[in-house]
Image 1 (tube, rainbow, N blue to C red):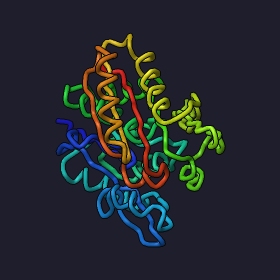
Image 2 (cartoon, helix red, strand yellow):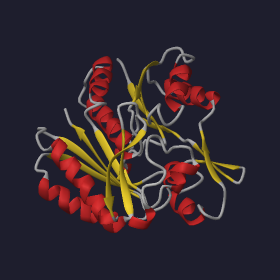
Image 3 (cartoon, one colour):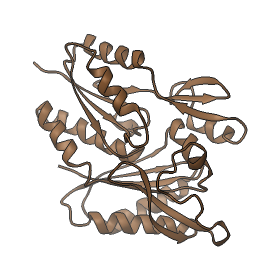
Length: 282
């Protein structure tokens, strides 16, 4: 009998309630002044938030050996199939690293899914993978369904300042200057290439959050069911506001998840991120 694992990198913000025995997380690396930590294992978001302006923070991929060791360990636990869900190849090399690493492990049939998304946006792809496996959907069919949803799902977010995205080289197609004197905030998404781009510019944080809510509600109101994810960094009060507004306006919500973004993502967004994602549920 086939036994299927779901594997994610730690940049895929998988809601804690979805961590199960067949779910495995590969931690990315957070480097603070030359000292390496494992994302979400030996360093937590609160620490990065507190220290981000005190130290030189960077991030790095897991090594090929670490990827092979993880997949070999999964096979040794009796799994012969794995759906691997990664953050966007347009933002990280982890998708390609998993593609290469999976070819080195005999006896484990792998499907690697490039979500073209990030954080909770990628996380809801993993949630769907878990649900499909739990529902008994055949391995290859599940991977096909996941790939078909990549362009349908959306993630939108805004940050306190763009400085951290610029410093980390993750600015993508977002303008590095959007008018600080006018308090203009870009609403950012991952485009069809999996690269950050601006979908709107509005004045002030609240207006940016409301714009994101509008985009989610307008784009997903006609689906039969959608999963919603709300991620934040130092914005718990905004999470409650978003939950209230979205549940009031969207009547087709299947599951709603909230969470704090990973330390590795915090390095690149800085404090004060709020993000919302929607994923059409099968």
